[in-house]
Image 1 (cartoon, rainbow, N blue to C red):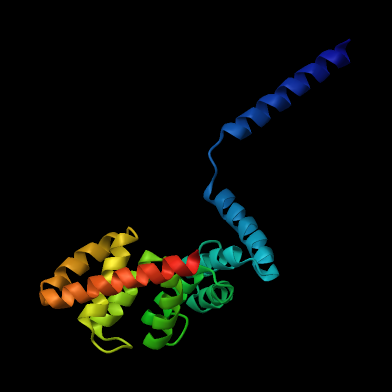
Image 2: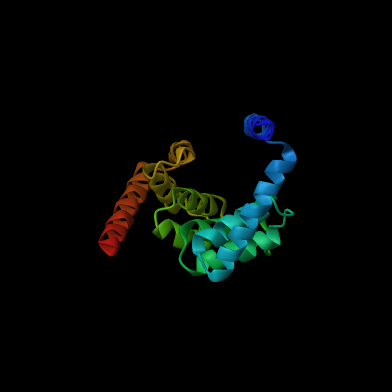
Length: 196
């Protein structure tokens, strides 16, 4: 009988200890371990060729989450995702190419990747295209094209697009604004018919 009572108290003690462990807040070491495990799984999936996992691994390298921060590694994984047509990977390569992080600064490369991402409906990419035309980086200075891309970014819900489109419109003639709006409509029609 005494061994049963002792066993009972041992089980109760163990269950109380485990409940106490479940109630404790995770420590930074726990979070780092969890991130490392997540990164290992992400790496395994990314190496198998999953575009979304490649993109997410690129994000981790860009931000230094669970891995050493490295724009070069980020660009490598973004490129793999982008080559599979993954829109967010294409946008990230556009961004890194424009800034020269992890890859040489190359406005033509930025323009190419942003164009691919914009064709898939990325408002952020549309905004960058507008900025490239507005600032003449990699393309001739073209207020009409800049307005068109800012307008498309705005229509896609990218808030900064509206601010820059409206600011730019103040520098343009009414006929230039009308041309930009016409180009934006035509672009939308092309994309809609292509995607249907």
